[in-house]
Length: 465
Image 1: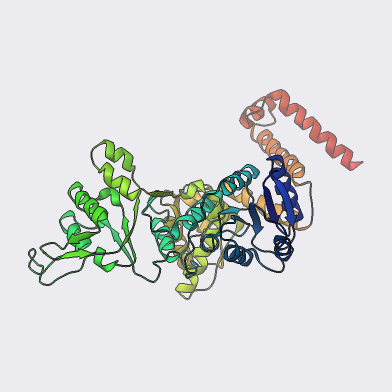
Image 2: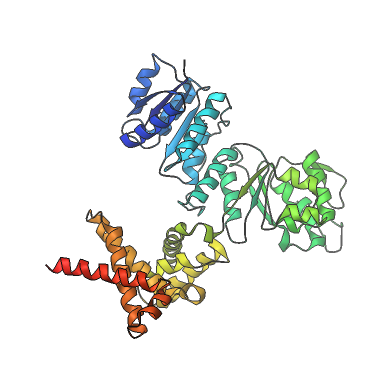
């Protein structure tokens, strides 16, 4: 008899496609439109796994998850939601979710989750509820960021060491803080140390502390970051810049959980979770003999890679509007907004400094932009170089949004026709009506241009009659 999988979602389309995919994979599927109906059925039958939406009429999905986990902790529950952020994802895993699928998801991904669940993999440990991460600025709706949120949700409730990788400015410390906020250590301290910002001769003292008289200028005892983070989390940023000699001592502390202050004889123990981050390729540094392989293995129990901003361009408008509003509020300035063309320009920029660069730009614009609406002319440097393309792209987006709001369904055909008409007219005017030169400028063959011009004339003629 096939394994039973139940699906609860108030969206009929989701219930249908997910049910069909799971049945095609060989499961016996029952679908419910609300949690109460599922709970009533649970009194008579027993599934091997449950898929549940988060936002539903009646009992919400997370409350259903909490009830199912309390009654049947071995029953794997897979949560689905179109409203994905780090707080929601972490909450689902805290309540015992087996997996968290952000909508829209690939049906193969859902089937794979069902197979893993029925195979018997244990759900993540449940931790006490923690504070929301609304102030952590981990914002994004892109697929890349949803994977980051899922990783945070999975690992936050554990005590595993985490290595966060990504370019400078991608938000590695924000991820570290989110891991701490949603962990069982949230009541303890979060201590951050940028190892690249401390001179190598002082870094050992910063990490492990020192006794009075340990070196010139050490007039009193100083507790190090390990002692300060006792019971909480120690975030070691730019771990790739740590000197080799100090890597050796750090490895010993991670292995034994105890250390001496510089110049001290008292053995000190500290209960600390380590989260490290780097923008460097640590494997390459290991090959060059610049980083200890055994230390990398200790730190890299779980790795969370962060995407560059250019790899998640769809998040740029969301981030820009958030940073602009926060800057205006923080400096008590008049609220401003971006024009569509300006947002299109920001989205098209490369952002070598990533999210940090975008945030700094928004702060500057909150102060320096003269009007309430920020346009292309207000964007400095590289952001404005894409102005011409961004202007028409922004206008096109605004037109599309208006048409969609009015229920139009022929947008692609109409936009394509108008785009060709404008491009052909501009190219012919630029080249004095010479079709071969105009076609070459457009990247078309002369015959193709002639045929498309003829089709366009016939459409206009037909419309006129």
